[in-house]
Amino acid sequence: MKSIRKPRKAMPAEAEVIARLADQGSDVSRFFTNTGRMMTPMPGPIRRVNVDLASGMLEELDRAAKELNISRQAVIKTLIRQALDQQYQSRGIAKRRVKSLRRG
Image 1 (tube, one colour):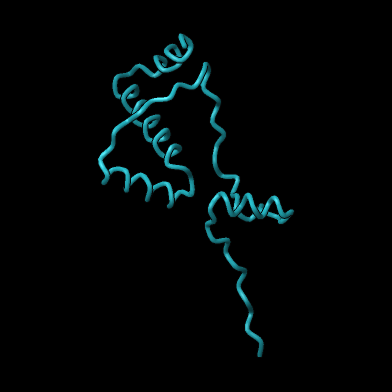
Image 2: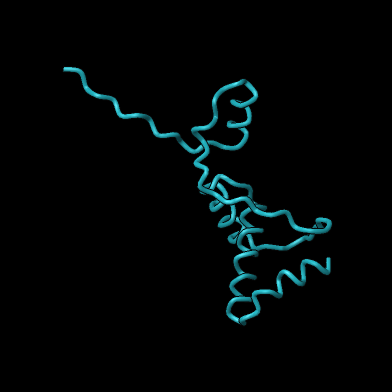
């Protein structure tokens, strides 16, 4: 009696691996779930900042980035956005974020 094979689940892959497969013409749709949401671009120019972080915090950020399969910068931006939204919500000033973005 033959055993029935279960379909393989897609293993998380690094962005470089997915890009390489796509460049080779491979179907990479298995790596995407279409469950995320698109972020609207920030108005105005991007400004760079330097932030000093303790090595332990940097290691935590790197672990989170690896687990989520995104860049460290994306983790930092996401956490900052969540913290600011939480602060505005707790103060009852949800529209302040929109006004401050328009001033640029």
